[in-house]
Amino acid sequence: MKDFIISEVQQETAVLVGLITQEQDETKTNEYLAELEFLTETAGAVIVGQFTQRLDKQNPTTYVGTGKLQEIRDFVEEHEVGMVIFDDELSAKQIRNIEKVLEVKILDRTSLILDIFAMRAQTASAKTQVELAQYQYMLPRLTRLWTHLERQGGGSGTGTGGSVGLRGPGETQLEIDKRIIGDRISFLKKQLEKIDRQKATQRQNRGRMIRVALVGYTNVGKSTIMNMLAKSEVFAENKLFATLDTTVRKVVVGNLPFLLSDTVGFIRKLPTDLVDSFKSTLDEVREADLLIHVVDISHPSFEDHIRVVEQTLADIDCSDKPVFLVFNKIDAYSFIKKDEDDLTPATVENRTLEELMNTWMAKAQDCIFISALEKTNLEEFRKEIYDRIRELHVQRFPYNDFLYPIYDDVDWDNIVESDESEEDEVE
Image (cartoon, rainbow, N blue to C red; front, side, top):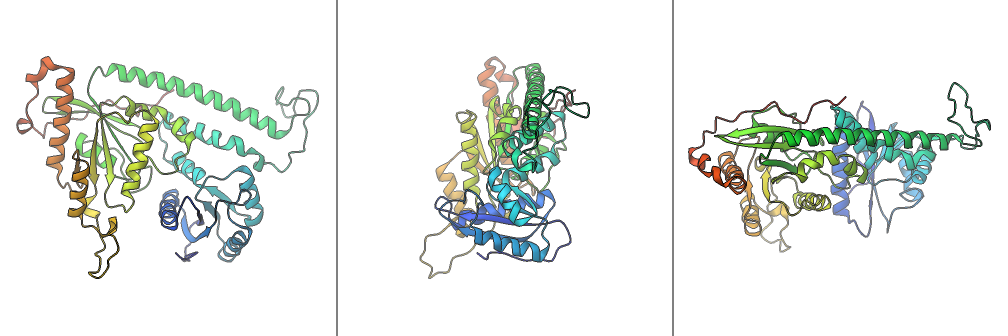
């Protein structure tokens, strides 16, 4: 892999930096950097350089070695780069030391994701969750924001400029800001508790309807599938985290109703604070009767994406729920044909779609391959979904079995969208 790639751009520019370590080989580092590049483009910047370094582990003071950091500085100065983005979460000490050398805006993977979340948040719930995660990220890194830490406040307990009672005896500006942010975090947590109670009431008002949740890695096509099944217009875009707010739609197939929810996408190295802050979004997953796990089969790392989602589901105690695996984007699938004299083992990139389908069908029978965009295999997909929901209905309401038609008798044009949604603003 080349250390950097140069392109002529006029927009805000950025350089990416990653490490090849004992725990993360070059292939994995390249995959992470490709994802970081997609994140950066989603945030609106353009990549003009990319640097990697092979280390046993990241430098605790500067992330990369001092020589590599100077090499990055020379590139940044020569090409007038506006910011440098690191593929791992940086400590306050690392950010401070890196900023002294590079003298440009420094972001890590976590802060970049938080910035994207802040741009994408639309409802009061999402905005509150993002703000909480931002403050939780900022709190341990406050020291880098101040160059006047030695400045002391007055000893009378009365600050200047009308901030009565904020500044105690001998209290530094850093301590004041920590306390202010701590108070803000407490306030936001109370706001989220209020929002959670309102959403819990909404869920109770839905009665005992079957709930189905779309889960998966970010940008795998969950919102497109949501629009297809519910005939709704949930925002869908080929960018990471296009959906932050949980959207719930009531879908009626024939006379068989169920609730379908679209949830925020997962991602590798997702900040813990974000997972905690977005627990109300994940509540839809926890309370679902069926999970539709959508996978982008065209992505070379789709197997790794599956593991990330499965681990996240395990972390929120949802690994025991019934899961239907949906391999989406078969229209975008491509492979590299091996030479006949190449005796090395075949990789995912070398398999045809048919070979991959047979492999997965042998490992996990409960799956299907579709293209939501091109509407490929949609009839089979609908049948699979309908059969599973019908089975759940019969288990829950066995005395209503006669009300649910078999699949062949379903009127698939009779799919309606309810006004019920999780996108309501909370005062």
